[in-house]
Length: 415
Image (cartoon, rainbow, N blue to C red):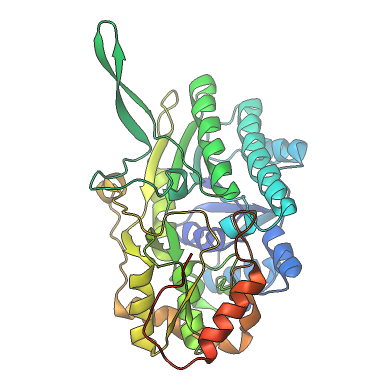
């Protein structure tokens, strides 16, 4: 297939690009390299050294013999260029990663809130409009998030895949309807993903676009079989408080002997997926796209569910480091239950990668190897969810005090 990977230079986009290319697909990346610009703004770099997009593509051609196209294009602001690229390449499938992906960054300031909405919502709508204008019948797979459901769902009832059956009382008795699962975003970033799914619903119904929305869990791990082939192909490893995913942050902190930063009680339950499974799920999604006229297909792209404190203890015990309990900068319950359905991916052949010791070693090897690149001042999250919460300086003071104090019984900080 001819596949466009939007945002193909990013943490999920780059390994997906190589994976699909390795399978023989004809790949073109569309990216405005904004994630690299954000690194400059935040004055932090990936723990792993990331080569330029040109060097990455040249290295892949050397080791695989396959070429990858690249177009530097901003989906949110360059609509006419997007239409021209689509009309020229006429892709069979499009993978949409081209959104600002970090919840903490989206809550960092009024400017980052506005940027996240402007970029994410406009990029998605421009893409949908361009597909209608060009008449291209491409399978569209969008990387969404489990966060559209929120984390207030409790008890044993599993979160379904996108749609919920409800009973509606009428004068003639109850009738059943299937609706999009009610959205409950916990950040501006998650809010943009809930807006995405409404746009998908409209354009699938109104214009027959074939859309798969992947509600993905938190990604952990760094490398895939393809990114391991040459150091110039290495994937991102974000560890800072804005972009670092929780398990990867723990692994980096352990590698440099820093206390593992757990916000609140650590009782938050989250869904997880390894980067190797992410790329496999993308391939499954574009190979099993819905028919024109169907509602958007929603797949829960997760493999495991864990409490944050369980992960911290797992890493802490393995690496011999303490846990630092910090005030939680998010507006959320101290604990939640999470039971998630992922039947469709399992039925389509996904064989999940689990948190086995060997795969944890893969991540700690990366963290240990590049630990000299870590900036400890970037570890603590600097984003707070509402006025009156602890500031970034308060959090830095708290973690510094815990790091310097003798080992104590693990008692969560008061909220």
